[in-house]
Image (cartoon, rainbow, N blue to C red; front, side, top):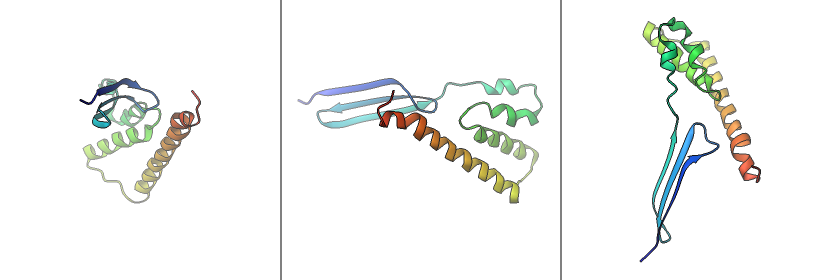
Length: 123
């Protein structure tokens, strides 16, 4: 009879948001793995109630300090969709450039501030 072992970590550090992990093994075989990355609701919808819809991009950009462009762009796209507006050309290219810049910044943050300290043995 093989031994069943369980590893359960309720809170993982150094992830964007919060995370948890569950691993169950039987003998030398991994039977089940669950990784959860979750974010508690922040209720930003409540901040937007009663405000001019044009304020949405600036307010939603504060949802996340690491990825404000993604939220700002999401709000802008929703407003454009509501108004029947399509953005293309140079403005679309600039948006894509800003979004890609944020993506690179986010990855650099992950590597140098969240993961590299662990890899190099720093707390």
